[in-house]
Image 1 (tube, rainbow, N blue to C red):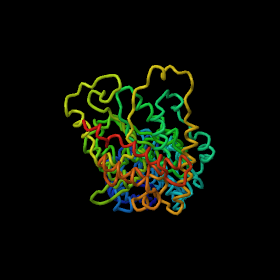
Image 2 (tube, rainbow, N blue to C red):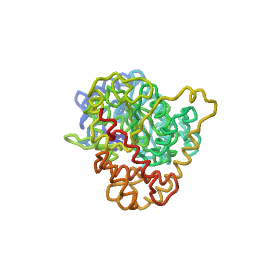
Image 3 (cartoon, helix red, strand yellow):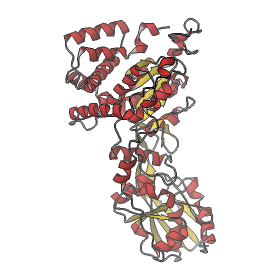
Image 4 (cartoon, rainbow, N blue to C red):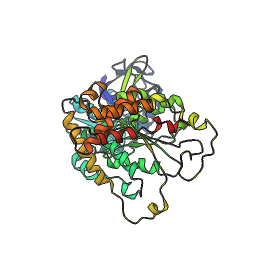
Amino acid sequence: MLTKTFGSAVQGVNAYTITIEVVVSQGTGFFVVGLPDNAIKESQQRVEAALKFRGYRMPRTKVVVNMAPADIRKEGSAYDLPIGLGILHASQQLTTERLPEYVIMGELALDGALRPIRGVLPIAIQARKEGFKGFILPRENAQEAAIVNNLDVIPVDSMQEAVDFLEGRLDIAPVVMDTRDLFQQAANQYAADFADVQGQENIKRALEIAAAGGHNVIMIGPPGAGKTMLAKRLPGILPALNMQEALESTKIHSVAGKLGANASLINTRPFRSPHHTISDVALVGGGGNPQPGEISLAHNGVLFLDELPEFKRTVLEVMRQPLEERRVTISRAKLSIDFPANFMLIASMNPCPCGYYNHPEKECVCGPGVVQRYLNKVSGPLLDRIDLHVEVTPVTFDQMTETRRAEDSRTIQERVEQARQRQNERFREFPDIHSNAMMPSQMVKDICRIDAAGITLLKTAMERLGLSARAYDRILKVSRTIADLAASKEIQLPHLAEAIQYRSLDREGWAG
């Protein structure tokens, strides 16, 4: 007897429906075909143990499981449940006509209980797209799948519950979530607030500009100056996530298995802070079964690289292309996968190995040329892709003990959102451009026009600092953002001058 159940395979951040065909016939042996990995081949032992524990029998004849289409690699243990139900139906221990109506996924424990799986959200989206009535899955994943409306999400704790539901003996109510209401209730809630930061007004200003235009930032300063504290508060002043961005971020975290049990929609901007020992594959993504890396997990949010020169050079260099293209392509012999990577890069570093070069009070003990060698660990091409270079100086005792509360994140966020609204109007005819930082070079010339005085100022700065053509574009983009914050239609001389000062690492004073 031939039985068909339906599962799903995730490649990148998209899912593809897999037809699982089970035939029980004369002969002996258990065979799984259709490019399964070892975890799927081992499913025989889990399925057989689960069937026996629940009082069913494993056919002692020939069992063939075909996973179609056969040219897509299937990986993981999430196919245990559809394979088990297919065997029960093919051996006439399960009587139902409802199997083709549902996508079924779940990993079986030896007692027939179900363990959670990853990649549930893209699977649910694909199931609705292909017209399935519902999705049978482990209870821990139900809230994540319920983000997708017009799909019956059936949570089960064990294979027995799935059998009882399919045979009509057990009525399981689909999990229903008011996604928009849930999203609006919890959106834009961050534990860290700029009101907690005393002093550092110039750094807050730079981060406000970065948030308003989507610019990358590097902060240079001695230990304890507040670089990490300031970076952690940046997501709180970015514009609130919209529903589309929330779904994109949730899909990526779902595929990577980062959502956890009973998780739902991500409603705050991601903040990722990998350790400097991270490998290049872990940062940009990859592996035998390509998985998203930290830059994709930071999509629509912030990637914070603390102590930038301590990262391996190869790790930093692989970020060049994603910083420009806002996506990363993982290529293998048989497939090529795109992961989105539209993130803001916030980096921090000490100015030298001892940390006190250019410090207003403490003396640097680094020898001649040491500062330059330390800065050279970060390549020029990578620095060119960072729009704002900001010097962070320690907070004075008077500033630390000040009782007046600083400006809170919500107030700054309102100004940022107004600037972003002006950019949305400017780029409404360009669906792939959402902020000033995303403008291509040819658009910069049209949109970031400056007058004769501005051209003279910029020419002098370019010659004195030895800036590259890419740095020229960055200055114009930042000055356009500063003008947006000031509600100015044109880039004025003060806007341009402020943008030029955010190129600290290009100045002669940092030559060591």
